[in-house]
Amino acid sequence: MYDIAFIGHYTKDTIVSAQGTRVVDGGACNYGAHVAVRMGLKTAVVTRLAEADGHVADELRWLGVDVFVRFTPQSTCLRLEYPTANVDERVIHVTSSAGPFTPDEVEELQARAVLIGASLRGEVSLEVVKALAGKTPRLAADVQSFLRVVRDGVLVAEPWPEKAQVLALLQVLKADAVEAELLTGESDLRRAAQLIAAWGPGEVVLTHRDGLLVYAAGQFHAAPFRPRTLVGRSGRGDTTIAAYMARRLSASPAEATVWAAAVASLKMEAEGPFRRQISEVEDLIRREYRGR
Image 1 (spheres, rainbow, N blue to C red):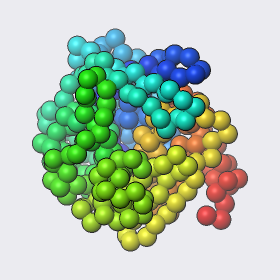
Image 2: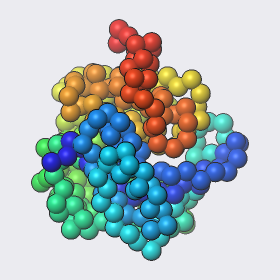
Image 3: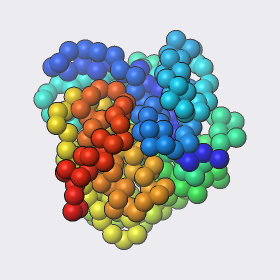
Image 4: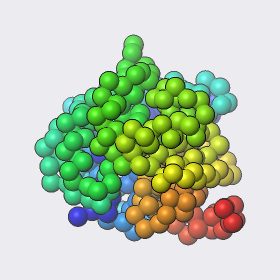
């Protein structure tokens, strides 16, 4: 029995911005596991990648994560282009995919919480979601796993035919502000969160450029991001929901909201996964979030 498990593709991310072009090891499962294992949680990852990128699984195992890999002919490779100084404006190209998960890949998984973090629709099917729902009391997902599709090589968000079926199986849903509006038709984040919760997930985690808003048990909780520098925008949402879910295993929604904001803030100060000390998170909370 794991404390928390992550399912999703590793992604090899080519990031293009005014600072230049560089390749970063990404993927929601990778970002998430780095957070959870540093919090002392018994952590598992179910992922798909090419053998050439096996160093990612090796690093996670070295940290103490149990990694269940299905090797594929190619990894999922993304090209993230940031055309302006606004880090929330980006175009994501998909150049290859590691293919969809199958129910047998999660057959033996048991965890107190499971987080689905896929790059695009079809990576985690409704069949796999149903299988996961029977293996954990707290199933969470990032809505990008189901809204994103590839059109002419570019990731775009489109209406989601299986929305009602998947949301009925989730306890927690994460979305960003744009996704929340696409899902609900509401630009007001609070109203959007309430609508999503009415469809099934008892807790809704919404990220936006300034922080996150959580709706749980009929109450709202909010916390701002406080990075000293903004270097690692890619993976912000993945890190936020992972930190929230990991903290919720032992804390209230209010505490988990602040914790997630602090972890994401430190992650954004560098590219790649969260690699800071937990003591730094605690120090940041004392400095920037005291009294919240």
